[in-house]
Image (tube, rainbow, N blue to C red; front, side, top):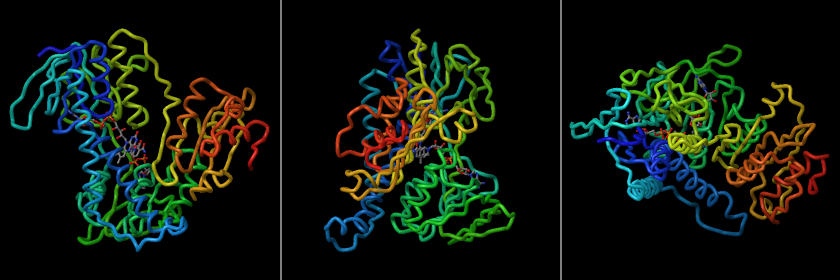
Length: 466
Ligand code: FAD
Ligand code: NAI
């Protein structure tokens, strides 16, 4: 079969690229090696982790927050099997949704491993042992990423697990040792801490979520500590030994002393690597650079004309919405349009409670670049809405250009931060000043008033309620 566009990989990058290519009138095919569409994000990433975050948050609130609201119930119990089944149901609903979208847009779906035969032909090796070759005028590689594992960590997927297994546990761990306090560690560590596990974080850097604005990490640490977690920061893991029913993690601290932590489960979440196994890139004339597929900054085209790459398999943030933007971008580029992505304004969100959300520059980045900036912060505890609901942890921090007042970065930790960050993205896309946002009416009482107040604080320190 001959197609205008073949997409390899059906994650948020791939399936969105296929939809946009089909919308633009291209005969489009998508190849997925698993039997379900949706990639990491839908099957073992964004969606199942959020389902468990929401379930565990309900449990935590029932146990710890209801009484304060005057709701008396007997002590809630966990049915982990039901929690995991519900999560599977959520994923299945969304799988069906993507199947529907493929049909609606007349996209041909091939289930099987895609590998290059030459620069315009892809072989699809199917589960039943048969294979089929298809050709495309344009090919988009969207094969995503897999968890990074270190050679000295014997991941057995039972006691020493990655995020994929952590989404399918049959029991709540007694003591979960989390290697890496980045985004996955914070989210899945929160799930099991809320369900009653003791959680210990062993992290190489000196804080949680170390790539985000430092204030966010500090505040998140305090919030997760309230769940009973403990931290081993500035600890480099050097060994993991599986003793059968428990696992011992060995690490070296900043004084070069050896520290051992033993738990019944160890979650390894130290980053993800681009995934190109089995693609046979060489046949298309392509290679990888430190695992990633290299692309031209202006077109996302590889060095082979007609072959593009998007999402986790190329440089940049490993985020679903970044992959989606790139999917649309490439489909429109193929159609001869001149699309645009503002990489500075891809927001980053951690779905803990409180949530953390950021866009633009961190304070540390501004300092390092020598840019003159000013800071306006506003605490959630001064908000009427936060007080009414009892979610008073957190703050909004706005960074603005000292001379022009243009907003350069917004960092939020608090209830609904994940949704609130959209206002900052819109404001920054239109290059708003802090004063612009400070003068816009924000409904009362809402959490978004913290954004307005932080902008007031950034402009001549004139927050009204602090
Ligand atoms: P993927 O989603 O990885 O999809 C790639 C697809 O290609 C896979 O289905 C794979 O099977 C297929 N494939 C690979 N090779 C071949 C081949 N040769 N032939 C055929 N098919 C192939 N991001 C967010 O923005 N928000 C979140 O809340 C979030 N939560 C996450 C939680 C977890 C636990 C994890 C692990 C990740 C999370 N992410 C989140 C990151 C997000 O999942 C990824 O950034 C996103 O899935 C990348 O999309 P992609 O299309 O590039 O690749
Ligand atoms: P990460 O990069 O967020 O965090 C990994 C952490 O492990 C870092 O803090 C790092 O310092 C630490 N580390 C590395 N080696 C170590 C060692 N030997 N010992 C101790 N600590 C070590 O990666 P993570 O959490 O695995 O997530 C992978 C990707 O998935 C992220 O890049 C993220 O973009 C994406 N993701 C996004 C989510 C979201 O948007 N909400 C949720 C989950 C994942």
